[in-house]
Length: 435
Image (cartoon, rainbow, N blue to C red; front, side, top):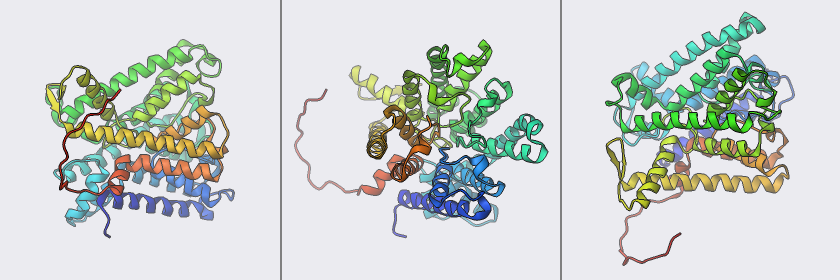
């Protein structure tokens, strides 16, 4: 196939979404009320680990259909090429150069070195985290649903949480456990670990001290902690007395737990323990910002990524300080990193605005609800203010496209459309007035 690695990777994900849609459309996968577009939407949402749904996952799909969704979430969250390379390595087949190029794009790496080690790290971390998460969640689900289905609920939600998918088996997500300490600990822990990125996790395991960590790991840890603390306090302050959200809770501890859960779930996780549709507009805008930022590179999460946001801030500070290099933790960043960040952010904002514009043409609902929906789709978050099921065919197709672009990465679209050329003519410098 004469396609570049980014284009080929995007093609693989699209094929997986189509196959998943066909599997979910089979009579054995649902209870008879799921159309093909609904099945394809669910498949695309699972492959892109978003979590938006037009039908209730728990009641519309059978156990077989739910297993299909879980498999799609796992393949989409950890990466198609990750599984391919892991299986090939396990059976003793060497991975060729072309496969490594695609894997590099899938894992958002800049080099081909140590990709096999990274793949092993990804699989081992995923298995351990999802296994531990399923065991802990079983203490919640088994007493209410019995051993068989309770264990399945634990496994499904553990996989969904670690991959930052946000798929739940109840129409109200996890609102019935809003004040359950174990739920408020296990689910956030899973999607925070999955959202940090496997490079950071591997670095923490290998170095085990702050000074030995790479610049990327330091920026991710500091950025993640800062965003969580800021959003936790802001959500509590904005929604504390809102009768539709935190105001309806009886105790201060319950409000603190609910604020914590909502603060971290916006980092592309997609679960919620309160009614998202009843939040204040100011809180909605804050959550949209967090969804656009997302989590870490080489993670199961989406968004422009925390490191991208930090480099944007560093570049802004460097401009006002009249410096030509960016500095962080005793390291410097060059022009290439800044250019990539600018391209990624510009394309991301363009995708969100175009998607919102097209959806608003065919749907006359609340503008902020539509903006929240599109931003959630691009950040592969899965939170919704109730707009997903109200969209017509055009709106759902647009949301699927936005989810797909948010998962494969905006830069993939740019690399697919762009052509690398070498300048044969140099022009004299000119001056334009900015700002």
